[in-house]
Amino acid sequence: MGCTRVVERVCAAAGLLKEAPSRFESAESVAQGGVLWALPALLANGLLRRAQGCFQLPAGFYSLTQILVLLAAMALARVKTLEQLRYQPAGEWGKLLGLDRIPEVRTLREKVKELAQPEAVEQWGKTLTQDWMAQEPEAAGFLYVDGHVRAYHGAQTKLPRRYVSRQRLCLRGTTDYWVNDKQGRPFFVVNSVLTPGLLATLKNDIVPRLLAEIPGQPAEAELAADPCRQRFTLVFDREGYSPDFFRAMWERRIACQTYHKFPGEDWPVSEFAEQVVELPHGEPVRMLLAERGTRLSNEVWAREIRKLTDTGHQVSILSTNFQAPTTGIASHMFARWSQENFFQYMMQHFAIDRLVDYQTGNADETAQVVNPAYRKLEQEIKTKTSKRGRKLAQFGELTMPGDAEVQQVEAFERAKGQIREEIELLEKDLATLKAERKQTPKHIRWTDLPEPHRFVPLSPTRKRFIDTIKMIAYRAETALASLLREVMARPDDARALLREIFATEANLIPDESAGTLTVALHHLTNRASDEAARFLAEQLNATETLYPGTNLRLIYKLVSD
Image (tube, rainbow, N blue to C red; front, side, top):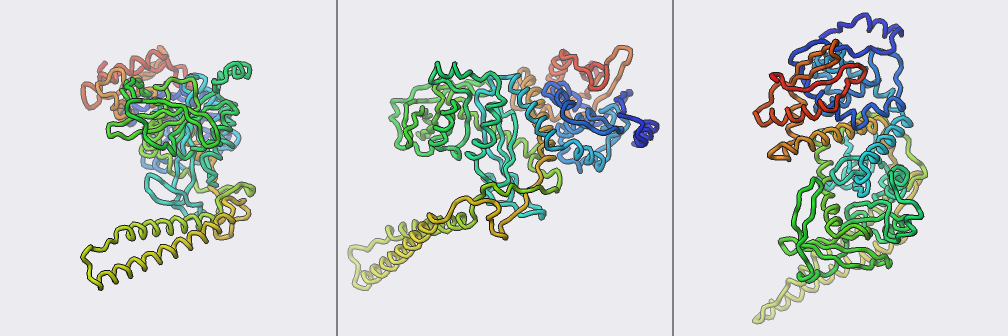
């Protein structure tokens, strides 16, 4: 579809137009029209509320509001990259914005470049986090932190290798540390190029930000009056297990919760009692739980809660939260899978691993990185230890028959002696390698890296800007899914139904005299889906949302209603 608002485009090119207003016309069967059903949730999650104070675009045809709505709609419609917009009908998408057509990919890239200024993106992310936490202060009481490795296969730079658990490989890439609530909804993400690890990122980047941004934290007088009270609780996996870290956090009255890395012997089965644990979405589950107090290696006192599984295995949880009930500790620990599900869903549907651009940045020359020589020694020690284990097992399996002849005895002794000699050589090599490792620093400054191991980090700003929009889109979809779960026979299908709605055609019916814009969705695949969509339309209509930049109130319905 070509341009129909020619005069306005000429004025914009001549610098005589600040921005083109959104102006809707009646249209039938607009492709992806159902994505407008997410607009109230996008606005409620702050897509535009804080953006006007953080970003500014130069005068032109497209406004800041239109660009942000377009990027959020692309995320929900599963248009995963800006390049994929080349294969979308520009005129149809333009109708969703009240324009004749959306910008070309090159123009959109220029707009993103202008918006993605480091200070503006950082300020926007912080204000959004503060708003989300203020809306649901209870969700900020337990925060889930985990790292997600984004593999990089490009040739712009040679990023350091890191272990990707989902592929069980060491690949080049960067690590993003996400902070989510127990339902998997993201608050913010911290990008780490130099691989400091989870504990270092928590200490240097995440905890200071949480202390500054979490609302409703107890005052110092309240903390002094109650020695068991905490500001909030951090939940993470075994990578963050560190008694020294637990101590450091509790000195700031921050509780930590993770799986016990060294649980020791099993507890007697008689200690376990069946209790009802409520999962993040309210589902009650019966679990066999037991609790004890435990003193860690550095004398830090913690709660240890264990779950007895059907197979007899005992899952051990450590927590320095002394106020939550046993069932609450178990519920929040096992809800950590919501963050794993978040990573998987965002990779599949929102393409958080995709590159946004090919720009590189500057490395912090004073930053500490893992010493390549230390890493090499670690690998050699692991290899030698594995070989020694196999040789010890082979040595133990050798047995001599009771009625063996002289030749068999001699062969047995030779085999035993050869394996013993190999074990002694391996142990000697291990001792040498461990002594060398002890003399090798584990971390060195980036400037001290050998030349073959030096790298230039990728520029994170535009990626962070797009990821923030994807976070808003995910939170909006989560809010709509929670509404649909109330009326669906299979609540787990709520997101699938939303994806169908976003991909469905819709009729746009503006009524200037009544001040309304009706988005009439075409029928879905079955009657049950239509009924769920009608329920969702009632909830959306109750918000009385105005289309951004206009005085038109959005009305949602199905075409035959």
